[in-house]
Image (cartoon, rainbow over all chains, first blue to last red; front, side, top):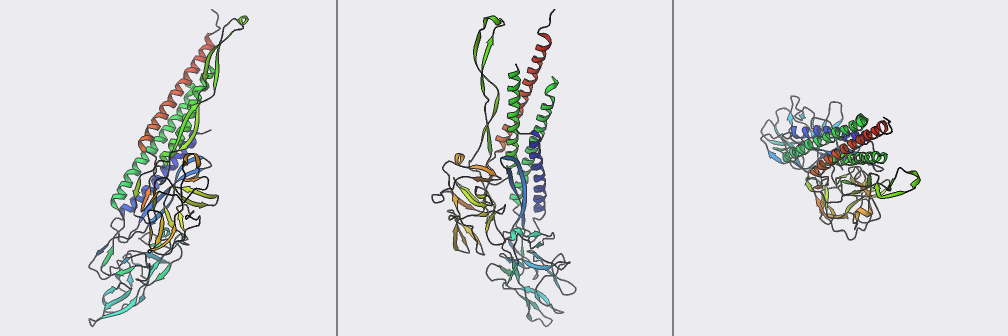
Length: 246
Length: 252
């Protein structure tokens, strides 16, 4: 025996899932110009248990780690990765975070930091008076010293994960290792599967504007259909209640 | 007259069940690989309708023919029609074109699905979004080497150019008869043949849900109107019954 109240619940669950998806999609659209941003996707799954239909649920969000386009920039500190790796940064609480956003700056303490101010993990030091800190494809960091000579000042490694799609989001375009992502593996840029580095490049957001906007449209239509079904179920319940009113 | 009352109520109940199915399909318009559930109605049991004269001594029964006692939901079936392919550019999103199913391993046994949202798990297994292992043509979990994955249209997986496992794509000649829908987006059935698989695998694509918005809207209206009509019938029958009780047999 099917209950109309159960049907109401199917639509209710669906409305909630769509609201969450709306958040995910809005966040994607807001980051269309964020360097190194990776698209988040809502994965819906059918809910069916022992033939009892329960609609859908928002299973989880997945990070789509496709390569973003590299564009040229004028800063030697704009580093971009072509391939799987991530830059490592030290978060304020000491944990290591991972990012694809390589728009770095050298702060007043001559520390290499991200645009949000998190220190970048690398092996080397920037001496006083050094300018034009840059990187080569294999991760060698160079700078121009006070005498105008280009010197090697250190190396930077990249980190990769078996399942980067399962990384946890930490906000600020920074990801954290999770059970789903698997353990972080460090390696030199240019070695197999880690990707190569290039200076004077910025990795664009991998958002496909057309896809996200189309998704937004279908999302809104699906939501209004679900609302319609919800209202109709409600009307049917009212009609059942009013049976004896004739 | 009482029979009529129950017939009308049976139509309301049948439409309540249909409403649930339609709502479920609407909810899954955005679930990749979802196959819509269709509900059919059939007549409830039939009875002999008889007419007896008021004269008890006549002992005469006139058979008027058969009378249906309403309606009920007949069996539900799954519409296995191909859904549209949607480009995602994600290398582990796979879509099937043509008859066939991916084989996945769940704790309750092997299941079949058209949902090709796959991931590489922390141990480099190819898994579904629900974490079930995707099986190859020998029924073994698929272990991916590290690197860029490419999948041929025949379902052969290669990583960094080195050929690896082949996806186990199960083919059923008559999925409607052979498969059962047990869990979300998963089907269970006899062991499928994987050798004569012919579907085309498209990498970077997902098969959209085959629940069709315009069809669903039509079904919604159909259910609403037929529920309303049945409700009016119940009220009519009730009114008639009320009249019978209050007017018939009144003397003078």
